[in-house]
Length: 219
Image (cartoon, rainbow, N blue to C red; front, side, top):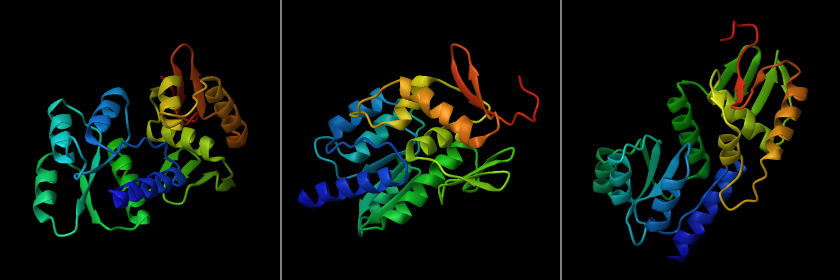
């Protein structure tokens, strides 16, 4: 179990360093509670979880209509787990041990596909965000963002044209056990507007924020 705990810490750190807010569950019951309470962009699911195994969780979540992309982790040589996982509704799988760089690439790909993007470059007019390199440019000029500013912009870019509520942004900036302050969202939005220099981010009164190319006709 110590090896699994170490893997969990390494995964959490790698995903956090990659720009994601991460919640961890060491056993299946807690994982089930988290997934029922929070909206996640992606779930990385170890099939060998104690109390409730990962395959049972996967089937339960899909049976309830959960559409969140799920990447399963399997033990080396357990080909039957891979087959059962894919048949159970998994979107991708990785065999342990693996390199965190590959897992991050697969997570980025799952999130892109769910949002309808085929490449790492997300574009909104002259604004371009590369999910693989974490680079942001406007009219070809590089824009330096903090990790939290990047998370906010990335979430808006993946949902451009749609209104995103403040609560959704908070959920995707901070892990569940973090100290969440709703006022910081306005701070990050204000910083992004200044750094981007072009009014890509709209405030939709009473609802939240929307990112769109201002050169295109709005709603």
